Length: 143
Image 1 (cartoon, helix red, strand yellow):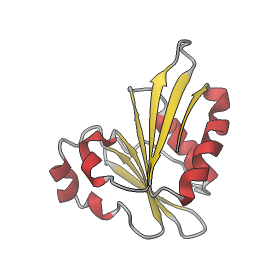
Image 2: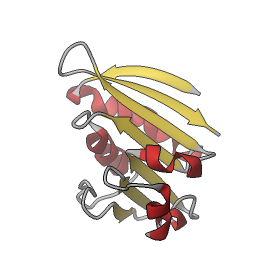
Image 3: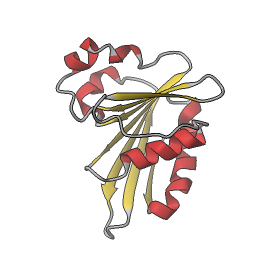
């Protein structure tokens, strides 16, 4: 499954609704794109759509934030910008969160751990559009 969509800040809810439907098919959601492209914004709205009520912030300095909704589902929001290698990720014990039961991982800057992400992955790539307020999102699902 694959799609491309152009969005602006005003149309993020439409994009999020489209991505939210993949929750039943994907355990991992990866987000790639330049700094400031909107990765954390999309993740924040996606977690709200899945029932997370607490404030969602970027895990830049602690690598992962953990959220839960009232249905007992767990969401691991990773920012791997500062992780240097797959070994560093595994040594930190973060690999245990991937594919854990009743949980989903939302990963910014996933390239460093790509070999660990083999199935049930929704890859979201965000690029700047021709207008500075637009972003182009490509989504590919690997089952």
